[in-house]
Every structure is written in structure tokens, then in C-alpha cells.
Image (cartoon, rainbow, N blue to C red; front, top):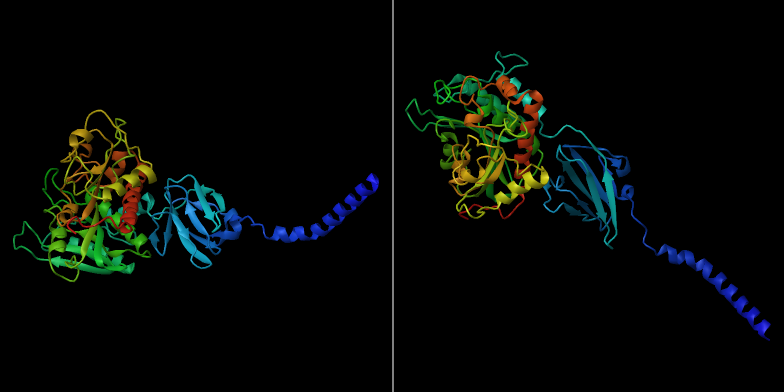
Length: 471
């Protein structure tokens, strides 16, 4: 009897296994299938596994799949949706797909993207990266500088020198028309803004180039700018200049390059890109824009949120002097109402861009002190190479907007004792190259500060906490 019972049990077990076997495939079909990168992502129209990213360039990323989310892991891998920076670097699919623009800095060395499913799975994609052509580059800047500062007009030479603000100065008028044409050609609503505010020939009229881009909101305004005039003959302390390469053709060309980048982007507020006149005569060009009523002028019925100023660019860290010390790099935010506290939200962006995105050496110091003293904190920062903080320093066009309650950032390189050609005939592109030890060094220095200010604009544009301090 015992043997018969065991045989019956074995038979029942075999029958059960035979019945269950066909069902196992059905149960398996209910298991969650692992998502692969190539199923979810294409980059520039190519499967993710076949892509090599180019540093500093735009890349189109298409995420396909209902309920998916794309996230960028590193600070220097930025995601843009509908033409604007996504502050969280985490973009969901609304529908069955979403198109994202990915941008790295020229200094990004690793790119990791993560795709999340709605049930919590994740797929990590490590993308190789190589050198690219940055959307703003030191090379493009140098080529435009060379075209503007050369001597004799030709197909290869604009020769837009001698830009002294006067009533009138034909060379200034010619240069202003050229700059206006650059912005107009990119699709901006561009104005030559002329204000005759004095009959004194030593205080000449203002002639600004103002390029406007409409924002999503009709309630606010923001901007970037640089002065295009140069120190007049016999001007202190160096006797004036005719090329003004460092002060401030460098900042002028920077604004021209920014205009190329922002032309196809979306901005939150109405945005002006400006080239000021009469900065060397007391900020008179930016003041005329900010405090007059005209078609091109600053709207008086909108909140002025922020302004970023570019003045004297390119002779700064990572370039070094002949003695091996690095040139100073200054980026000052404001208003700095209380030196003991952080007063404005734009300071957090200033710090984040330099510290976390560009990985600047924030604690780099040298013995001795630099020439460009700042009002509030100079005793603590006089030997700090990467001089990035709130401050009340003036003497450039950001002061015009700071006085109106805007949150501001002012970028400035070497100054006074660190650049002997300041306001002198020796302020030429050729001299800038010599001072920093070669064209490659100059291009590296200007590229760094151009990326810093451009990233600050991207973040400030999408940060609601950046408000006029009087709002």
C-alpha cells in the first residue's frame, strides 16, 4: 500500500506541473520590462548608445514614452524646455514625448542622464563627451575683436575705432550703425537711441544701441549691457585711446555674441541688450535710457528685475601675469545694503554659477593686493583672485540700474595697477594678447567670463525670487 500511495502522489505532481507550465508564460508577460536607453532617448536624431556629445554645444534630446521623466545629474549639464532653462534639471513627459535642449559648459567632462518610469524604475545613461564649438567662444570673440579693431576698412576689416562720444563724432556714428545692424539682422527690435541732454561740448549727447526681445510676461523687464564708447583723447589717467580694446570693445563684442545665443531662446520678461554711450562721461548713456520717456527707453510701468554689466573683459583668471601671479577676476552683485548679510537673491546665482557649474577656484589667493578696490569688503578680499560676492562698487553702467532697485551683477577683470594700458593709446588687442602671454590665453580668459555671465542670465531669467528690491 505504501508503494502505491507514493506512485499516486508522483503522478499527481507531474500532472500539476504539466498544467502549470503553459501558464508560466502568461505570468511572465505581466512582469515589468526593463527600459533601455535606446528605447527612450534619441539625441540629435541618433540612438543614445551611439552619441558622443560635444562640449559647449546645444543637443536636441527626444524622450519618448508616457509617464517618463528625464533628469541630468551634474550641475554643468543643463536642460532647457520651450527655450528656457529648467531649474530642477528634471523634465517630465506630458503626452507621449518631450523635446529637451541639452547644454553643457566647455568644461564639462562627464554627462549622466537618468530616465525614470512612472513606476519608479530608472535607467542611467553615461554619455561620452568631446571638445566642441561652444555657443559663445573665445575664438569667435577674438575674430570679431580683430575685425572691429583693425586699422583700414576692407572686406576683412571693419575698423570701427575712434569711438569717442561727441556731438557728433562720425566714427562713433558709423560704429553705432554697424552694431545696430548686427542686432537687427538677428531679429531684435533695435533702436538708435539719441538723447541731446546738454549744450556743453564737454558733456556730449548720448547715442545708445538698444535691442529688445519680447518676454512671456508683460509685467517685467530685465537686461544686459556694455558700454561701446572709449576714453577720449587726453582723458585720464593714460591720455585716452583710439581702439579701447579692453575698455570696452571687449564687452561690446561679448554683447554681440550673447545676442546670437538669445535670438532663438524664450525669455520670461521683456529683455534689452544694450550698448551704452557716454559711460566714460559719467554713465550718461545708460542714465538717459533709464530715466527718459521714449520708444526705446526703459518702460516705467514694468518691474525692473535685474541687469548684468560687462566692462573690461578678458584680462582675468585663468590668465597670469609675467611674474606668474594670476590676474584678478571680479564679479560683484548688488545692491549690497548690509555688508554682514546677503541682501539679494541674484548673489546665490552668482555663487552657484562660479562655484558649482564652472568649478572656479573660489579660495585662490596671492600675496599682496590688487588695484581694483571695492567699497564694502576690500579689506577681506584684496588678495582674492576669484573675487565673487556682493559689493557696492560703482563706476560702470550697472549703477544706473542698481539705483532703480534692480538686482545687478558687474563683471570686471584687471584694473588700475594690473593693466597699465588702462585709458591709454596702448589699450589695443595686440597689447591684450601680449599682456596675457598669447592669443590662446586671452581666448581662454574671455571664454570663462562670457560663460559665467550668460549662465547667470539663464538662471536669473527663471528665478522668481529675483525681484526689484523696491517691489
